[in-house]
Length: 400
Image (cartoon, rainbow, N blue to C red; front, side, top):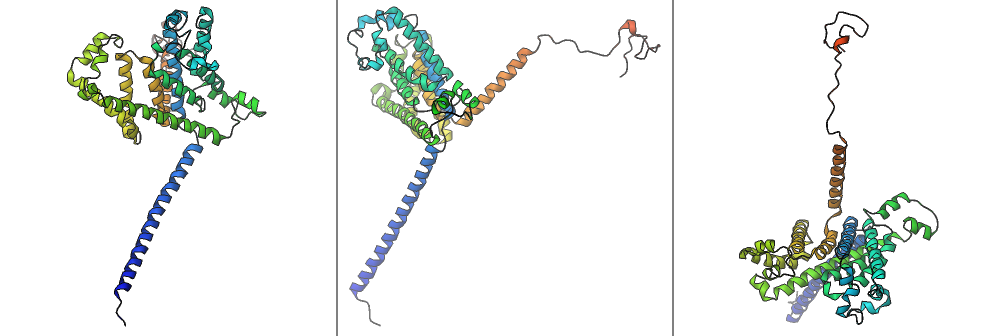
């Protein structure tokens, strides 16, 4: 046998390395393709198979409706001064600051701004639509009309609005393409009663029977959930980054100033009690940044998701009470409701129904229970038995 030359050894080694690299790349590409395929299968199943978070988005509908009802009722007595003819001093009637008022579809309240009766009628119509939206009656018809009128109303006076108005109308627009009345609504009850209805698509649509392919409605509903999730995560993460860049938040005294501002201090004594201890102020300031920044990641695990939701709920309740922004907080809580599992909403619903049934049963009972009935014979009839026999002692009970 001849000894291999140096060139032959180099060629063999190069060939072995190339085979190894090719096998390695093939394995890596195989793993990547397998992950992509599994991800595509999971995504397709998640989007198409069924509507997700049907109970959570129903709670979102009801809380958003309550937010609108609360805002309209609280401002009813001052509606003409805040939004109507009395607010003409701000220049909105002659030159609106919002571009929405320049679009005919969203300009109804702007055209009625200087007419007391017309503005009040439109105000009451908007309130009635909010109630119907809460009940989930003909949501596919009511919701688009409510959205258009609400945007027209909310843009009447920029001086009394806040960022909650932006979130409110964005979510209302998204819910038009979802199924917010799939549970806990009059629409859901009508669909159950009209199951199996035959006829044209118009009759089926009016009776609540689905006439669009389920895969299409499922995709639209679930994509709305994805968009709402992304929007909420962006809001919290960007808010945390903005806070972290400010010196008051870095030093830990950021919440002290708004607590002692007259505009954001509906309960001065309570604000003073919360801000009297420096370490607590620092802990709340820093924990709010940490919670908002980590909120998107904490949604990925059930345990951390529960912690994040409880923390963000406490965060919004604190804003509602201490800063006097209840409707902003309620709107954000409504959006966060989609992150609570369906099984949790079902358990809470079952607990509420059981408690209500128990309360009605207790209320139906008489206040004073009658004395128990015994089979003792009166004294006058003590000498007579059931068969007419005599000789029993007076007051002796009859044996059964």
